[in-house]
Image (tube, rainbow, N blue to C red; front, side):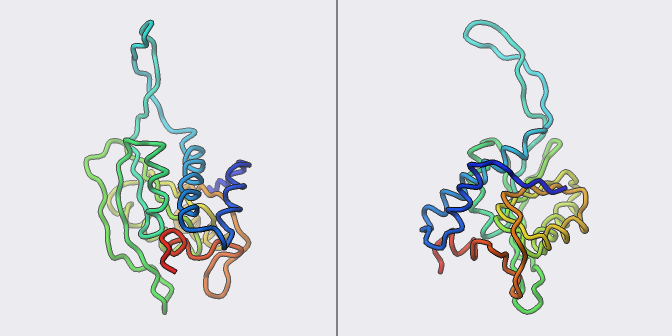
Length: 206
């Protein structure tokens, strides 16, 4: 299922993020802030349990997360969303998956994978600023499922309708949380209106 954020503050920050004149330092900060807002919404129904806690005045019953949270950035642009996730959930585990899109075939090619082990009821949150064709995210989900994990969610800042449709067909059990559903892909498979190449804009490489 697709969940598009309607948060007014997120939409404001996304507008500044899209601006071609936004410097990479501010771009990184905005990605960090937007990620926290999206993840906050994605965590709304996470499982919790009762625990006893001592306040300065008395003993009371509080709540604690049940699941191990695993953040999986898709290299390289997904790393730009990682700090925002860890700021919200400092105890989260982190895995990494490296994917690049073959310029000829437009298909994802895996070149790196490192996931945490010895997990307790894990929920995997795959993070990538852009869901364009969906190829890299589908390949990442395939990889995680091959490891035997089923509870997976995807977090993106912007998504194309084409990418959403493709991902949902491949993995209908995976929820997608996005900051905005944009208009379409162009002939080069870039999202319109989009925000350009997220990796280049995050790291000042172009």
